[in-house]
Length: 461
Image (cartoon, rainbow, N blue to C red):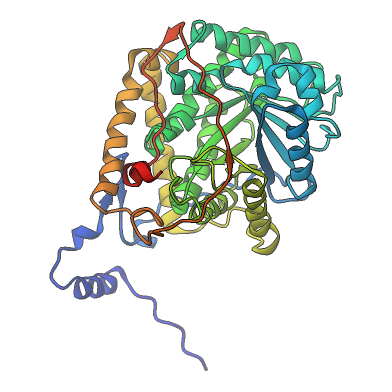
């Protein structure tokens, strides 16, 4: 008869840990993150929280998640060729950015041959989101089955650029009115992208990112109701955005936490609605001098988004820190997800993180931190008032300094930048980024993006 493996107790572990530490205090294994949350070295039944089960609502047309490709461009024919190549190569949907969004005529040309009833089309148009949404509505030719993802998100553009042409409240109202105008013709459309990406890319903590996303969602939902949309339609028309990076445990816990937070927020609005979460790879984690190790970071980010249960996963091209990715970089981003989906098959289990004492604990910790930040923003008068007053920018700046210190002191390494540095990295080709738009109307202190590797790359970048 086989003997079962012995189950060690916390006391057994403590004895072995103290032996390995050779006199150093056991408390040195306990860490605080940028939100002040405790991360312990061991999680088990003795300190377990209530189990968390937060799976994605449904498969994306038989696939575990929607593989979405980002195509940035100004020339309709070039964008169209890239979109068709990506869709034929395994992508299920697309995000468009660039000058092709300026009007329905170039956008229609860029979408020639794309069946929007089968392949969702999303937009990344910044403060001009309503104009781009109108252009996409025309390009869809009134098809009631078109899966349009307008992704209107003026708050992120305002926070990142530090300004908007008109009062930001007017831009939010315009987005809401645009949503109400197209809701009848396009019953499957989603209108708003509520994301904390601005806080994340500026160096914010997980809690600050989640709180920003919740506050943005609340702002858009209130504006949508004021514009005449029923709350259940406004909730169904809102996509939650979250950033995922190479710290895949925290990233996947953040996706799961966002699902819990959306459940609480939708209940507060009176209609519990399943979350639709778009996980997009972080740009603050990317290196520019030697972009090739970014492939490792992007793979980890894609893993986190998929295992965390995001409905949609978007990975940047590995060369994004240098400029717009070319066709090769987009193919690598697409194939990374295809390998995770079709070869690693990581989408075969619903919420594979469920039951992990650490990940369940971390999910709840991040959800509580995000809710606390959301409540803080609401007490400040809402997201617009917090941005105008600079309160959230101050908190993000403190987090940014804390996180930057871990890199500066060597507590966290960046492969290819601070460790395992290639003296002669291979070149990559990119397209030039357009100059950022300047806001000269409403103003706030900007949440300027940071890239952690930049401090160590110097002039070589």
